[in-house]
Image 1 (cartoon, rainbow, N blue to C red):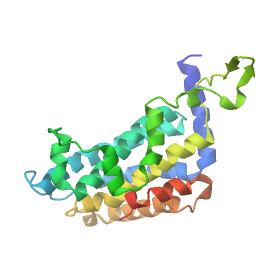
Image 2 (image 1 turned 90 degrees about the vertical axis):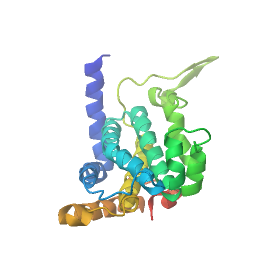
Image 3 (image 1 turned 45 degrees about the horizontal axis):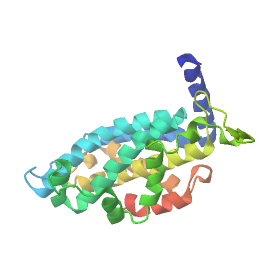
Amino acid sequence: MDVAFVKQTEEQAASATRAAFGDTDLGLDSILDTWFKVQLFPGEREPVTTNQGGFQSYAYFQCLQSPYTLLSAVELWRRACYVEASILLRHSLEVFVQLRYFEKHPELCLNHVTEQPKGRVRFQTMFDDVAPGLYDAYRNLSKIVHGNLVFGFRGDMSASTSQGAQHTVPVIAGAHFDQNLAMLVHTFLIITMLGFLNYYQRFFPENTIDTDVTVAAELSEAQRWLESVFEHKRNNVSDPALFDAARSLVFI
């Protein structure tokens, strides 16, 4: 096995992802196109010396970074690099949860991000404040990122064999499409993207998106498309229980 072999298996996995997810795979590219464009229209922000201005400054740069991180996560997800996609996606989701929390509590933002003594807010506190009940589901991503479940990505548990005290799990070489793992990552992608798009105008109330008719229309369409996935209208690629747990996080 070498790099060329891994690349070949990634292409095969990408074909399997497209076959399984159809237009919800292709639609993510359009969503990211729109999200990149939206970054050009934050409008005027409050002075950074105020609580609201400090939050908006933090939110501005986090939003600028987010489409790059999400683009990388989508590309990795397509190629069945689920561990690597989960690491980036966990970061993006945590950023959005922080933005939701500090939009509600702007007076706590700068002390937290500058790590002032007793200024850090526990992440579970943020989650419980903006999306009660979602923290336990989020921990699935954390388990992957921390390595707890990596064996499930590199070992074919369905083909494991036992001989006496010996237990053998065949190793998966290269990229391998897995419907359940792909679904988990995809669901968190939809949740995170929809949250960012829905809340951008709330984070930046003086935004100028409406000055560009094309971008405003694309943003509305991107929100509608993501909501159609979230609301289980594409049943072959939805996780109703997880989406429902995230409802209070992503909808205004």
